[in-house]
Amino acid sequence: MIRLITIHPLTASDVDSANLVLETAIRGAFQDEGLDTLHDDFWNEVNDKKRLLQMVLQQSHNQDEPMFFLLAKREDTVVGTISFAPCSELIREGTNQELADIGELGTLYILPGLQGQGIGSALIQALIHEIQRRGLEKFCLDSGYKNAQQRWKRKFGKPHTVLQDHWGEGTDHMIWLCDVKDFAAK
Image 1: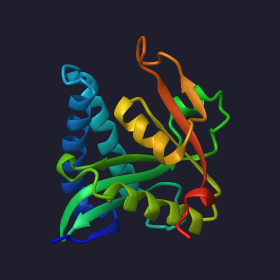
Image 2: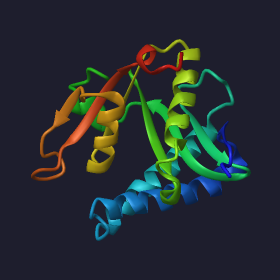
Image 3: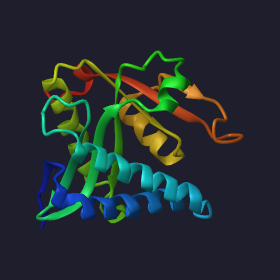
């Protein structure tokens, strides 16, 4: 039996569940990438995402705020996350400020046991629908995870910018620039 996924904006009552998804999914990503010994980096990544959750909650509930966070739920259980916010410093610096005014699709994490079931695609479509509703024409995203880079290449095509050896020899960081119209559901 397929259990339906619903997409909801972040609420204060979802924070603990969303934090658990972030921690679990980021741990899985670190393990998949062979980075499980980088404990400080892991906690820095988790805590950065948790801070973003808090920032989104603290902004007013104005629908036109520049940041928002969406959650995928199965029944009342959070199983995935995605955010939209001003682009990161890494994107700004990595593109010589070219993308400084472009918002970033980020914090896309799905519980490891549920990956590959379309939850991420549903979250991306919901995010694209919302940024399109807001009148935005472009978004960017980035990744230093090799496995995620392969998925992003399949979904979004060739990266706009590749920061060669950014994370060490043979470990690039990739940045995509996307037109909303190219990915909005028809």
